Length: 107
Image (cartoon, rainbow, N blue to C red; front, side):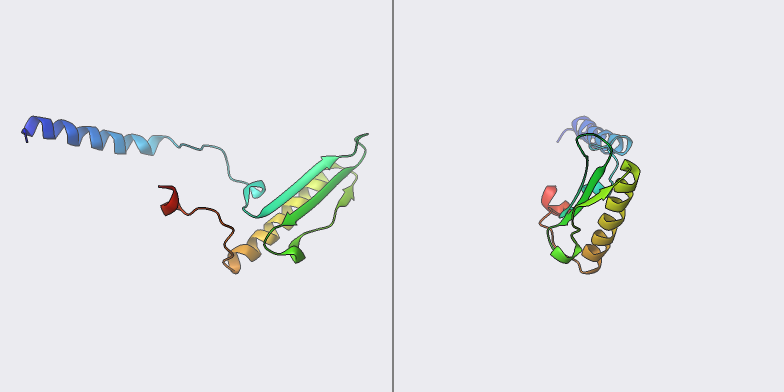
């Protein structure tokens, strides 16, 4: 192979690899709402005076919560966040597979 052609190919590969460090494909933050197998829901009553909150856990029904009513959205969001975090800690400690693809399956 021609040395100058080889040099161009190597430079292109190096440039491409270096460029990958400066950007991310999915730049959105990861939050409790994104945990696999856990579905937090918060929504207002039709008149907006009360808020409903519920957490549904696919892998363990005992971790799911019944529908609760709150007077403020912040209280409902806090309830959902706390129970979602608790369910995720259980999922991680028991190494529960939620059928999400691993990094090796994606690439």
